[in-house]
Image (cartoon, rainbow, N blue to C red):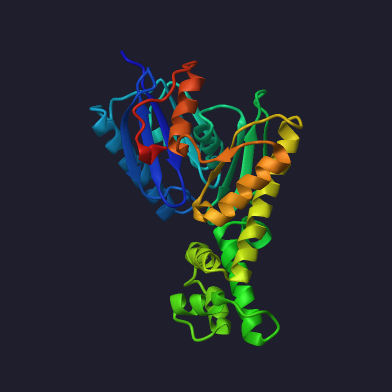
Length: 317
């Protein structure tokens, strides 16, 4: 029988499953909801639903019966840790070999196509993760919105609101950010918006969704917005530099891949790329493949299969 492989990216917003044959050709893909929490009965139900749904879709596209298929190997990358999810995943997916790891590890594998390098992730939060040729790994950042996540979307909005409050209270320079935040939120003033942000109605993700306002203000030359984005680029580059120093020799050129909505800002992205080039002599750019494809590559590797991925659509890159 043909050997089949499964890679799963289980994140805070969605779950993606890919299936490949022994040549590395992707033959099935499926998508489901978030599966990052299993601590409650509701969380476990959502986990099972998301994982089962995306696997059924992937098996359907690959013309496989999800109840009968046994994979040669399967890799799962989960947001929020793997310890409490491993046993549930084993219930749903039958495989001769398993690998359970965190989402940054599969993101790196996908970004560099399994080669040594560093990934910097800047979505709602931020962190850098790297692996060298010896298999040693290191991380920087990712310590949450209270004590860390510098350069992430939540951090951009936090700084924008601070600037808006300072302008409103007369002890900071004027900025377009105040009016743009108020218009987007419907708040009467920055003080009211601050108090809204402290309520359960405003999750971290919802607050982070205002980050494009900072990018838009920077595009039209708002000095405060420009300073926030440039500062974020410096912080994100700092994470990469910290990982680089722990894993690689000075002057060693390795790929640095950036992922996340924050890098949609051309200004921030350009400043980040230039800093990495100048300080580390490394080229920074977008990932080659998606985290789900990275999980699939890991599944192939643990079975000793060195095939390259093919038939991977743009949505999986």
